[in-house]
Image (cartoon, rainbow, N blue to C red; front, side):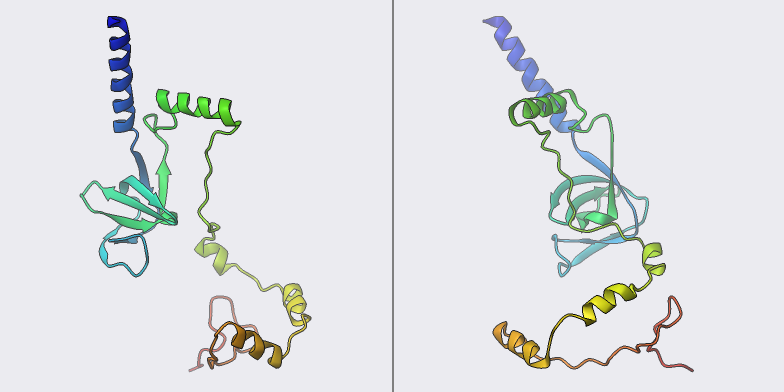
Amino acid sequence: MNMGRIRLAGLALALALSTAVGAESGKVLRACAIHEKPFLEASKTGDLDAQTDVEILARNGGWMQVRSAAGQTGWVRLLNVQPVSTEASAGSSLLGGLAKLGNVASTGSTGTTATTGAKGISQEDLAQAQPSLTELAKLEGLPSSAANGRRHAANHQLRAQVSEPLDPRPGERGTNATAPQQ
């Protein structure tokens, strides 16, 4: 009976320690604003510089709640923070490993899934982007008419907006082809 209590106390202590040290740390990849809530319209409470170390407190869709060493706490976009793997992370702790093993045994899956809903497109990728004339030709070949467009808009309660057409001539890379020349 006494041995059972010791085991139970040891298990409770191990669980408490793994939870305490299981907080995930991360590094800010690029300077970003800290928001009060996990959406763009939320008020900004501060800024984080690139390479700032943060503690990841929670995740919500495309957002992470973080706390910096300076004590700033708030929500930042998921793609602005790189989680840092540590030996103390829940996934590599003894209990985390046992839980993962139990999950594999019962479901055949580790349960680990990483999704952000966005592809990692860098500024360099955007700067080097080239138009695909083949894809443009496919789009131009799709059947459509002004009457079709108006009917679709009416069915979905859309309203017309006037916008200036883009200059069809390709401009130099990195410049706006429709910008006025001086």
